[in-house]
Amino acid sequence: MTVRKNQASLTAAEKRAFVDAVLELKRTGRYDAFVTTHNAFIMSDTDNSDRVGHRSPSFLPWHRRFLIQFEQALQEIDPAVALPYWDWTVDRTVASSLWAPDFLGGTGRARDGQVAEGPFAVSGGRWPVTVTVDGRGFLRRALGSGVPQLPTLSEVDSVLAMPTYDTAPWNSASDGFRNHLEGWRGVNLHNRVHVWVGGQMATGASPNDPVFWMHHAFIDRLWAQWQARHPRSTYLPTARTRNVVGLDDVMRPWNDVTPADMLDHTRYYTYDTMA
Image 1 (cartoon, one colour):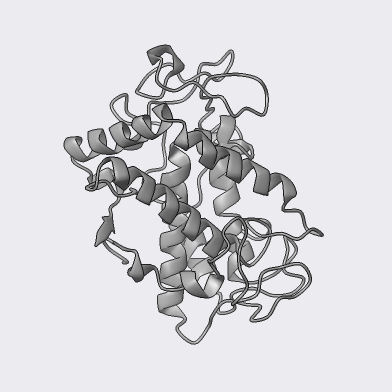
Image 2 (cartoon, rainbow, N blue to C red; image 1 turned 30 degrees about the vertical axis):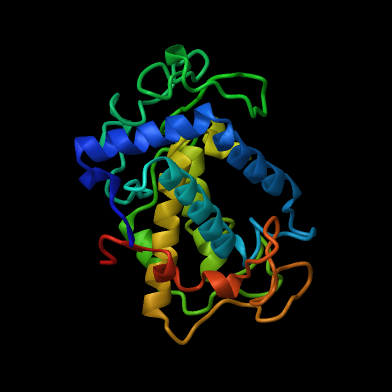
């Protein structure tokens, strides 16, 4: 069984194995396919469209499936690799361990945002950005520039306390747990982290930055915590409603995956701790 660990608890060998698998996936061209898929869905998922991956109830099960697919691709390269998660309620600064030169590298240069150190710097020749939204072929970050502070534990707890998964109109105006976690209203958790990292993470091509996967693994862990706290609450809507995916409807781009299939993460992986 795959066990996803807090990135802060990874050994040096585990960090190297994760980085090496990501770099190999990039070398083969398979990594960029994930970037392309995510960018296409962010562009098409609008409040009034047939939305699937964002601004909709299926935001969480869609990304759960997306992460599983990516994790399985890494495990085809190294079966021992699992997705780490980034707990940004604890690791909150540019000095946190995930931004070290031996892991993800740090923030970008002031003049152009280019990440110039670590295994994902374009100068190393192993991380050219080819799925671009601005024509620049290098990884960019601007840690802490877009918003000054990452979400806090108390803000997370306030969202985890919400008993209802989602409500009409099932978009960025909705009340409920999903939308407060996604960040279109309320304290803004998920979206705020993308903006805090900046660079490609603030665009539809956000998987260009490998921190995307660690961020979304933590979002997925928060969903799992919410599920454990509210066992009588479930995915809503149960039937297809106003261009959104119902509990038993297939989620594009897959032809065989529904939100119901994604409710039990323990079929695929566990987390090192759920506390």
